Length: 193
Image (cartoon, rainbow, N blue to C red; front, side):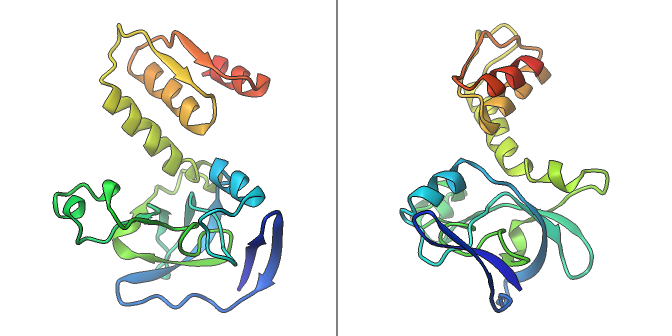
C-alpha cells in the first residue's frame, strides 16, 4: 500500500509499504479520508514524541472489509490502569493515539481495534466525516462547561475545536459573546456560524 511517511523534521515521503496485519482484536480499514489538524501540522515541523518513520493522521474515516462506512476513535487505552478500571479510559496512564504512537490515516489502510469503529451514515460525505473526531471533542468540552442559554461564552481560538464550540453554543440557543482568534479567515468562519 502507499503511505505518507514522516521521516524527520520537515521530511514527508510517499512510500510503498506492507499492508498492516490486524491482530485478533483489530480490523483492517481502507482509508477514504483523513483530516489534517494542528497536531499533524506541528509535528511536520517538530516530530516530538512520534516514533519515526511515522504515518500521521488521526481524524480517519473509511470502509471495513464488509463494506461498512466507519469513523475511527483514535485514542487507545491500556484497560488495566486505575483510570481504565474506573471507566475513565480517556485519562489512561498508558494511552496511545492512532497517528502518533501507531500508524494513522495518511495511508491506504490502517489496522484499528474493533471497539474503536463507529458506523457513519451514507449521506455523510467523506470530507464531512473527518470532522467527527474534532467535533466530538467540542461537544465534550461544551457539555463539561455546563453552559446554558443565558451563559456568557468566550471561545478562545477559532480552529476546528473552537468552531465546533460555536456550533454547540448555537444549537443550545446560546449567543456566543466572543471568539478570540487572530486569523481573519477563522474569524469569518466563526461569524458565519
